[in-house]
Length: 437
Ligand code: NAD
Image 1: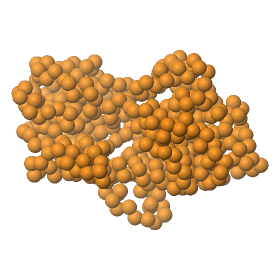
Image 2 (image 1 turned 45 degrees about the vertical axis):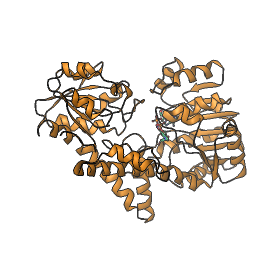
Image 3 (image 1 turned 30 degrees about the horizontal axis):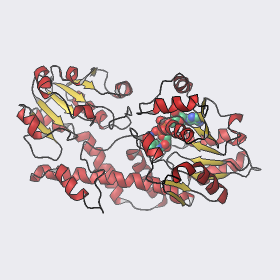
């Protein structure tokens, strides 16, 4: 089938390349020419494992092409996927101008029977607005509007797309349903569940899923804080409750607070939707508030580890991205942590395997970026592990200690073993686990 994807970011580029891998002929469009130039020359604009090879393979096979403008090239597409950003507005609602602009731009070129599919995460009712825009620009045209929220996780995006837990498609007519069935046939043939709902329900499923996961993280973080007071170990609590199949083991890792391009903005957007219609969501409201406070205050762990002050101290920050295997810095806890340390008078050295370039505009100019964890630890009074990259699980602790001024580790992701670290002579603090403070 011929498909177009508008927006070649984390979701658009991965989905476009994966649709091509499934055998479709895909045109990926992004209005950022630098991004398209980079992709065409084989440079991925984002760090996503396996993406470069996937794109290269499908470009070579002639199934994946790129463009910077929306024009007649989309007119043979059976479906046009909208995968542009929907960031938080100043008031916490989702910014929909990019979605609306993309729909307006493609409307003149759509063929009869085409399906415009919202893959972007959009507030409930956005599909109706998209339908209105299409009806205004092309009153004569019979097109369908569907919702197909994306559930891929950065860092595991390709396998998430190719082996999804489920595919959700919200439709209001049989044409959209038939086109979606055909597009995803290669995945459903391999057993991927395809769930059809009405469009508004599908839009709600995406927000409910992200808000639920955010709540799960908020809950385990709260348990972690209590563990610190009562001498329990949150990592073991997570296993102990997670083995209950009603609860599940995933998303129970305590840490510095959730970040990323989705959970904070989607939880806030859903809360705003509730406010706009006069509904109450007190649980979600508390989750958002508690997480904001957590991210702003978690740096105090480092303050405490160094006896109440970091003025004049050097702190090595290991990990900046909001999670491992990505370079995405949106809403990363490292931003709040580094800002606090800087404000309190610490000098900051930082290392991240993928996110340092993305981090630079978001962190104070005084941060010194290092080539590896040991360079980052050079002369440091404390190391803070902020992102759980695998390479931090196997640090050479003796080598680390040899270059540090003071052997202090604050492990905000619980990646190290307290016993091993303390046996090496470090002062060690983690999240929600007993240990020396
Ligand atoms: P992104 O910022 O990485 O990519 C969006 C792209 O759209 C950018 O490259 C931008 O240049 C392009 N764009 C904007 N307006 C355009 C236009 N009119 N024409 C052509 N291109 C245009 O964003 P993302 O992380 O891929 O997120 C996209 C959507 O998917 C958001 O709604 C997000 O909430 C949702 N989502 C993201 C993830 C994730 O892990 N990043 C997961 C699931 C859902």
